[in-house]
Amino acid sequence: MKIEYRKKLSSGFLNLEEITYKTSDDKIIKREIVHRGDAVTALVYDTKKCQFIFVRQFRPGANCDLTEIVAGTMDVEEESPENCMKREIMEEIGYEVDKIEQIFSGFSSPGSLTEKMYIFYAEVSEKTEEGGGIGDENLQIIEISEKALDEHFFSDLKTIVAIQWYKKRKAYRSMLQK
Image 1 (cartoon, rainbow, N blue to C red):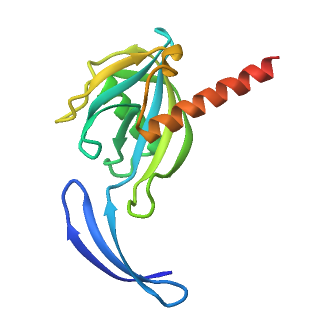
Image 2: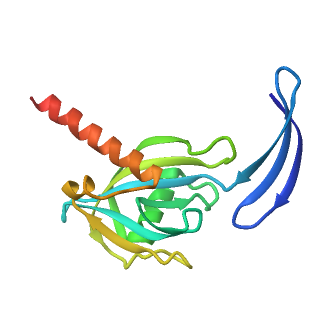
């Protein structure tokens, strides 16, 4: 496949571009692509409180408030995904990160969105700032116990992926201990 033509349609919070490309059998295809920049997100666990920390906020695409894992856009030039995630954890929930590991990276909707998402698991124990986000984020911090994860309904896919990873890892560790 080869992109033959690009046309900027709009720019703002999201940048929309129309592309024209040729398939291997010489068909010409037109598509719109949303350029947003890459993102980071983390399932955060407070080791002192034994609680997972989520944020709740209005999401225009879903037209409702969603409870999600901490997330943010990689908007600081040359910042690594891990450092960006640590910064986002501080901004959104006010915690210093004790431990962080990347569990996955990939594209959420590669047919039309350029964003690559890096998903982390982070452990925290000391809240040093208020949190709540910056600018117009208007975040509510939500703490959920491990048991309550099964009782809570999540509709955000990055959150579901991270929780399923945690459950699978826990099951695997439990099996190794037998």
